[in-house]
Length: 81
Image (cartoon, rainbow, N blue to C red; front, side, top):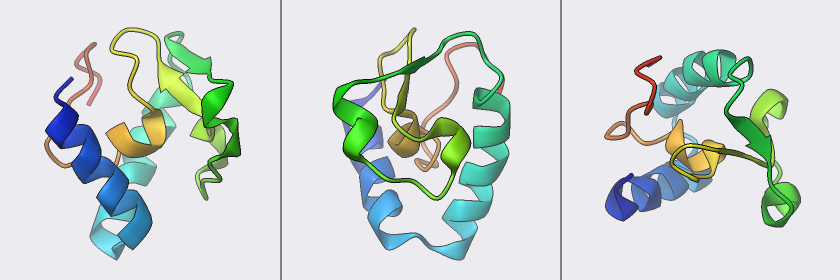
């Protein structure tokens, strides 16, 4: 995890460009079925259009999934995307 990449992901979460959202949708489909996807108590207040990953984080890198999947610079720690 690179904090700069996650900040880029949060920026993309806010701006919601069509290209970023297409990338996020593809990644969310993969993350939704990953056993490392965990529900976060603090993240529960963040509403995401991608309901399958809303309020979740990666148990390996601890990144919030809503931001991670929207950063073009981030990769999955398990090389799933």
